[in-house]
Every structure is written in structure tokens, then in C-alpha cells.
Length: 382
Image (cartoon, rainbow, N blue to C red; front, side, top):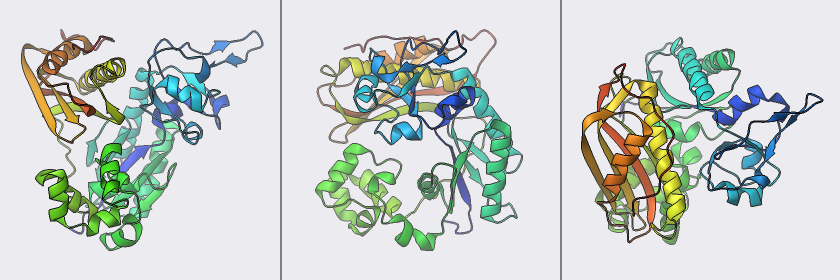
């Protein structure tokens, strides 16, 4: 790995919720949740005040899209079911998602960053990697300039991690939220990264954290001193070798700036392993949400897909993939959901599932006649 690389990870702070707070500044400092289905917009009262829905009143199977830091302090996080969250924070304000606004602010902050550091890898609506290696300013100065540009363009704050690689920068951007800057060198891994919980590594989810804990591996440092042979024996060759590398802060992936992606995918690691039949409704909700997000990504980036695929990782960490090549390219959520559902019929569903993903490949630029993404809700084809 080139030690002179400077890679930044920029993560917008509670992005969707922060955009909503621009619209409703009176909610600043309060626990606010965004998400759900059929959530009503705030109602303006006769005296000009607004009546907001409360989480305690929500009925349905919706999940949280995002939450403010005040809501997170009460244990309410993105991906949680709204009914479950209502028990933790019944008085939290509930707002409907406004994806048109989020896409607009996403374009604004990325354009602002590009005026200072154009080598950008787009990682989604609220985060990017930035290659700062060839820029003359020192890291803290660049981070301050980027944060100021983002704020001037959007009125929103972001947090930035700057390290020699993407793995460490992703970790560091989360260490001083909100509105933070964390700069780290390879010589600081032992003192600043190893004491952190292993789950701080992107890719180590709840189930992996639980399995590592069974072997008394709770921190990144404890993972780093575990023999690679031991990790391979417990997690398989590829995953074991990966765990060993990332615990030592090794990541040679470049910042990918080309505008022609090979594929677009979305996946979700669950808080608990889900059963295809016992948790059918929850899985259906997540599966549909992933298809909607893939369709939204395709629309935002201007592509349609000829190949739709799925990825499942079971509770024993075994993963399977299936895909289908379509006669015509698709970009709307309904067609993506239909194709992904056909793929799902071709995988065993006896085991519990810990991860579900949807992928769109064989991308072609969208023509004028391609349909926009549409909302869809369907049941898992079991």
C-alpha cells in the first residue's frame, strides 16, 4: 500500500433527518424519526403551529429510514421496525421520507466537494470517498474547507475521516460525530483503532460480532492478534483472511471515480437472523425496500439494468447468489422486484438469514422511454 495516500470518507450527519430539520427547525434538539408508510405530513393548526405525528401512534410494518442523534440516544436507529421503536421512544416525532429533497441536497453537497477535491467516489446518497493525495494543503485544512463548502451549499454538517485508506477513513468518519474531523496515520492504528469494538469495521455486523465474542474477540486489537489460521478455520478462507487484514488496517482499494459503474447494489444485514416463513412480513418489507433503493440509484445515475440478482447470507455465514438476465433493460422498482423475486425462488430458504442484497448489473444508459422508478409493495414469493 502506498503510505502517502490520503483518503477521506465524508459522511453527512443524520442526513435525511437533518434535511427535514431545515424544513422544520422547531424540531431541533428533539428525537425525530423519518420513515414508515402512509405517514402524514405535519398539520398546520389555526394558530399557525404544526401538529406532528408521534412514533407511539404508528401502526404498520414500516422501518426507520433515519433518526436524529437525540432519537439514537434513546436506542432508535435506522433499519429498526417502527412498532418496536415506539416502545423505546414513544414521544419521538415521526416524519414521512422526502426522497426528492434528499437527492437534491445530495447533489448539492457532492458538487460543493468537487470544487475543492474532484477525485470523488460516490458511495450513495449521503457519503463519498475523496482522494486527497495530490492536493497541496494539509489534511486538517482540506477537511475544514470541505466542511465549510458543504455547509454553505446545504446548511448541513458532515463528519470526515482522513487516513491512508478507505477502510480506516470509514471508521474514522464515525468517531467524532456529528460535525467532526478525525485524521489518522498508520502508526496510530494500535493506539486509536485497536481499542475500538470489532463491529466498527465496515462489514462486521451483529452476527459476526456475536461469533467473534464467542472466541473472546471483542475489540479490533483482539482480532489483530488472533492467528490468521484460527480465523480461517472458524470463518472460512476468504472471510478469515479478510478479518486478519482489516484488523491491521490493510486496505489497498483505490478511490474509483469512473462514471460508468459495472453494477449497482444494496444490501442489509439484520439485527437478528430472520426466518423466511416466521419473519415473512419483515423480510418482505426489507426486500422491497432494497429494490426501491436500487431503482432509485439507477434513476439517479441514469442507468437501466439487464441483469438482476440477489445475495443471501445465512446464519452460518454461508452465502449464495442468484441472478437472471432479462430480455429488456429495466429501471423501475416493480420490474426489479419481480426479477429479484424470481431469483429468490431459486435459493434454499430453510435456514435463518442474516443478510439480504439486491444487485442490478449489465448496466446501460437510460433512454428517454425508460420508465421511472415506482413504489411497490409485494410479498416474498415463498
